[in-house]
Length: 161
Image (tube, rainbow, N blue to C red; front, side, top):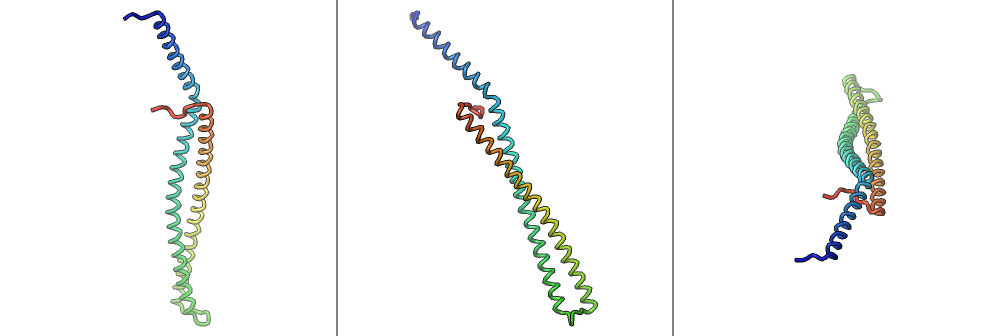
């Protein structure tokens, strides 16, 4: 088979065009490295915040369960105190009943103190949760902005698999 000069020129120009296209693609890919690095960083940070949010949700649910148990203990102690008060005659209790009344007051106060400590811890956890959600939302905004710019500039953010 005989190859003509025109065909050789065509093959040479085609090969040059393919190499130029590959070179240009490589240059664009290398030029987009900062955007891809920023994308990867935002994605990692979002995964960390998401895990933190999930962990705080579980912790909040656990703390609310404990807080509800403390509320029941307070209500129970209050009912026992009310029952003992109803037994008082002219505002006075017999000595044995008075000691029982004092023990119930102590139990009630302990339950209230425990409730207050757990409530403060729950409020701190809610604040952490809120801060994590805000951080995640800020990262999502950053990711959306990176993606918007990448689409406008024709940059591929994720590496091909």
